[in-house]
Length: 309
Image (cartoon, rainbow, N blue to C red):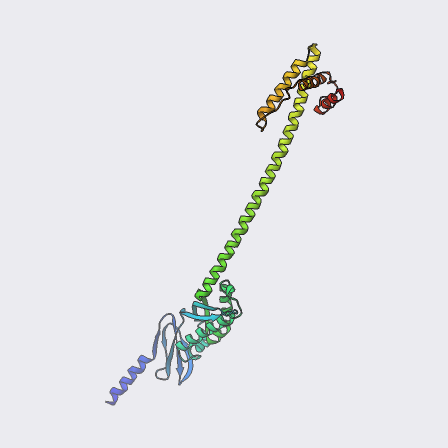
């Protein structure tokens, strides 16, 4: 009987002297209650009964979701939904020792990490106004990582990533923010419309000014060409020894016809009285007598007629 018990203990001791550590884990052992060493993945030998595995540490990435509330500088409630990713910092013996013994359980560590992240976010948001919160997502993530890096390292962990998936406000704040955005959009639209109207008016004024200038230049050129044509015709009639009165009168009628056709008025008045006809003939005869070889401008012709009268 004693032999059987002895063989059973020997078999149990032999089997307990081996430990198979799966990939992605590190086993922590103690020797007579004191930290001894870390067993890495694979088959390891340990002292039976005296060396005991007290903790199985996962070195794989771990994630946790958080939902919490913060208050801004202007007393607005902000609701966050975050996901943080963390892992054991490395597999050195000192790090594994910290992971295994800093906290009583893994759940207590997760709870402490979550509360640390929440506290850091709340402290940062408390110094910001509500309109600034939506624009500081990346700054907030960097602030949390910088603040927690040294603390997590002391615990044997590292924060890999922190994602702020959702930032929301109370319904009343969301509605007021939407009204502010809408009013700003209306103000910008009114400003743009006013600028467009001003530009159109300026362009119209510039176009009218250019058109008036061109009309004036055209009228001046027309008068100059008429005077030049009359002067040339008078020279040719004088050179041929013909009476220019009838020709000049015909040219005058042609000019009146052009004015009546191209003018914008509805009526053209002629002085049909005897005195009026005499005056017209006198002016035409004066034009025939004008020394055209010296000048051909309409102003000089008009002055010559006045002198003759």
